[in-house]
Image (tube, rainbow, N blue to C red; front, top):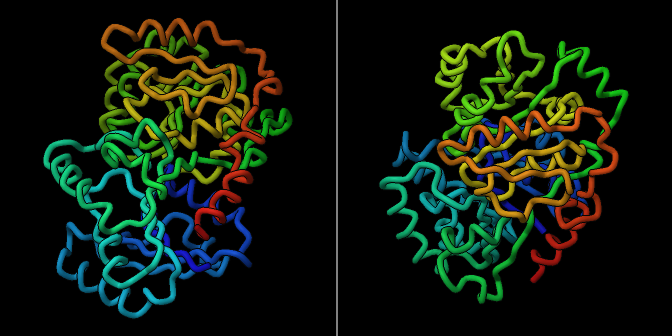
Length: 365
């Protein structure tokens, strides 16, 4: 089957990782993935091209709305009849133009895949999302979600009764991040982490991910005299303001902003704990990866239990005044470095090898 994938951006974030996990683990004799994006370049594009995928680009809609519509129509006119399915990954229903175009051009299977439980931006976009929510059953044939907690906000009431609704848990390849004691030593030496307690956050620098709360909560143990450091892996709109906050709090020396990295799987090896204070999520890929590595994880209690597979996960509040609970939890972390007792992702519903088989079946039905 030939599948046209929409939703990848230049940022190697959660959606991009989800898609690549399928691309890397699906049988290319059974499914061919091509890509259409309103980004001039998408994460992993070179790898996709090497794997034989076709990658096409249209202009950003908000920058060039007329050219966007014309280029999208031109692509669909030329290629829609080549595809058995379009797989549209979205964090909200603000832009469903790709889905509408697939509908009008007759792509038979039109999958919309939900990846978030709230609108990241709010305001007028909430109104557009709500309007499109009432239209979505006209344009899509299949309704997938990475989190059942996200369903009501994203799709509205009643979608679970639709026979084409499916809960598709986010999944990773556990072997990619399995704990390796020798690699841990190498990473810590290369990163200059020897003798430090390393708290890791892997996420976009965005209000949703709530890194500002983390800086304020952990400031008392991130002082220059401390052996604790916070490593933030990712980039985004808040990078400058977060750097300024770290400076203002006097903890800049013990907070590392590593930006986008292509060695995140190795960085987990050198960390001592994973911290995720997000205001909301679908199911965080980084959280699954951290668990697969066996890292103790501190996450916000606003997140559902769907992505929890290990027994060393602690949920904590992120309300005003709760910073002390995060501080206390960090101080109580086991610093033995023994993570071999905890990785339970392998064989679970979050194992990509399990989900690829479900993917094949859903494509055929």
